[in-house]
Image 1 (cartoon, rainbow, N blue to C red):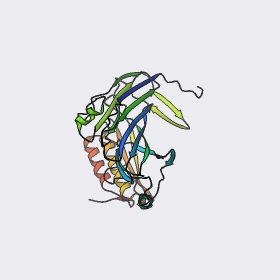
Image 2 (image 1 turned 135 degrees about the vertical axis):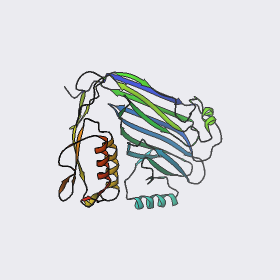
Image 3 (image 1 turned 120 degrees about the vertical axis):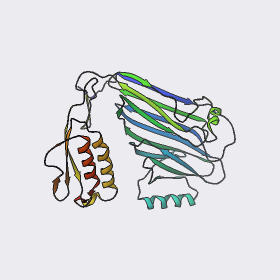
Image 4 (image 1 turned 90 degrees about the vertical axis):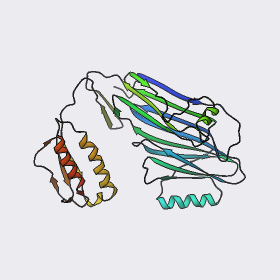
Length: 328
C-alpha cells in the first residue's frame, strides 16, 4: 500500500445557531463560539473557538470554564489579539499565575489556564480583555473513543455561560469502514434545540448548558479486524460480533518503587481496581510487583473467579510505594 489512505465513509453532523439578536449584554461578551470535532478512526480532535468583545473603556476579565471528557487531554491553547497569535506557554503553576497577574495590572490581554485539583477534566480559563478590544481563544483537545455497548460515543460539553449570537457545533466522522449506524440523542439536561438566540434564553439567561452526544458504529466483518500504522505507531481494532471473548492469561507488572508515591500509586490502584473487575471467568491472572527487585503475588496463575479477584483487589489496595505491600 502506498502512503495514501482511502476514506470510505464521511459523516458530517451539525448543530447550528447563527441568528444575531441585538440586545444589551454585560462586557465582556462572547459573540462567537464554534466547536468543531474531527473524529478520525475513533480518535477525536476537538477545537473550541470563542471570540470575546470588550466595549468598555477599561480592561475586563472574562472567565471560562471548559469541561472535557474524562479521557481527553489538552494539546494546544492559543490566543489571538489584534490579528497577532500568542501560543500558550507551559509554565510552573506559580510562575504562570505571576505572569498573568502582571499583564492584568498593565491592562493587557492575557490568558491563564489552570487545572482544578478536584476536577481533573475541568479547566478554568481566565482572559483579561484590554479596553475596546476583541480576543479570540482556541482550545484544542484530543480523545480516544472507546467502544461501549456496541457503539462509539463522542461527547461535547456545552456551557458558554451566556447567550451567544453565533454558535455552532460541527462533528465530522471519517472511518475506513462503512458507518452502519449513527444517532444524535436529544441534548442531555433538556437543552432546547432552537435556531435563534431567543430559544437559548428559554433555558436561562446563561444560555444553553449540557451535553451534545454523537453515537455511531462501523461495519463489523468476520476477520482479524483493522491495523493502522502512522509514523511508526500502530493500532489494532478488533471487535468481532457473535463471538465469546477469548480466555486470556495476564501477568500484571506494577511499579511500587519510591518514585510512585502520592498520586501515582493512587492512580495505579484505581486503574487496577477497574481492570481486575473486567476480567472474565475463563481468564487467568497474576500480579508482579517490582522495585529494586520483584515479587510474585501467587506462584501460579489464578482463575479470574470473584473470590480470587477480591483477593487481588485487597493485595493491590495494600501496595505501598516503597517496594512492597502493607501487611494487614
